[in-house]
Length: 564
Ligand SMILES: OC[C@H]1O[C@H](O[C@H]2O[C@H](CO)[C@@H](O)[C@H](O)[C@H]2O)[C@H](O)[C@@H](O)[C@@H]1O
Image (cartoon, rainbow, N blue to C red):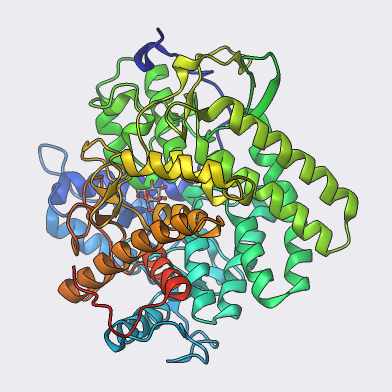
């Protein structure tokens, strides 16, 4: 039997998008800052987010002229003074923006939320859109070369805390919340920005910084357009989005993202994987990546490791044992060797959405082509990922040939439980089959993932943030929405139960800390999550979005308590 440890990557090559002299310089400042200030409270991302006050050569000259002690280190006071003199404060590249479509209590806001305590909190969560609303500062538009922030045409909603810029897949759940908040204009602005990124770079970037140009994130642009269009009928948006969606579809179905695989019956299928165009440390976490890579022997091993790290960031699940050959050794990350269930679900959704939008805008033959593409991907998802015995769709580990073409083997399915194994349920093609939904429900209920305060990301407590006991808003939402959309009453009840557990933990967490969190601990109601390479963040875009979307779907009766 093939073990995950023995599988080798499909290949170890691929393009690399060049970095910029500004990023290279800021990474040097980041490294010096770690040496000077020490590890405690150190966030490497802060340094690559700083804007220059003067041009790069002046700043570099001043930096190179800083006095160094006998160990080659810069003194704390000298570095502090240098930073204060030559850089703007972090976050100055974005400015607060008062969203014109925000009102404290919109007409028809969450009509089914009757309980006053819950309603009051929902209005507070709604008001957080104001805190997270930003536009690009005039300085960035005037002198983009002094900033790593990328200029974008419209205002945006950021996740919060250290995530000062817009993020790609976060935006889907932000938009779901904005729609519940009736903030259609703000929702459209986010999509317009993402379309502008696709038009410029050929894909939607991980986030709105120059160091994110080498990778994307889980592709949900079509789903954002679909949701906005369904509420507003905005034909102008549908028409503007279609060409960008076609480009994005090509990005995920070509070059290194594309893998051909032959199933047990001899039919070929095309599926997609994550594959970043990068083989160096991530600038926003450069000191961390270099530290891990120091365990590896040669340049090519290091480059492969860096590519895996960046590809994992592209998956949105950074980091998780889901992508490791050996769950206790971080340097065994091998994301490019995995065909992920959820990525292919997102692309299937993209195909269905493109078909829908093409039909709406009168492009019949385009609609037909994409319906066919969606049927092919559905067949591929069933042939490669579905595991009848487990009643789940499982990630598939590639054994590796340089042509990225290989034959399916049952033993290459990853049998570990991950919340993503249930993600196909989100798609109507799957949730409309009530017999299938029943099988999946049983499987979810016995998987161990369903916990007191939500669905766990995995069953492995590795210390990584996309593992047990963390639960993430997007994963709760996709599974709950899939269950709700099915016609089974039993599925709807389970969906409601999961949503209520999630709402409760978010509420109690908010009451205890006064903020919304990026992730939660699904074992303990009211506790936020931890682990990973940065301290837990608050704000927080997608958590707010999912709470509002759940409250819109399920409401909260007058007499139902919200405590744990
Ligand atoms: O700085 C480390 C990494 O941080 C980001 O990832 C996490 O936050 C994102 C924003 O909420 C979210 O989209 C992602 O799923 C999280 O894991 C960033 O996206 C990474 O590229 C970055 O290396």
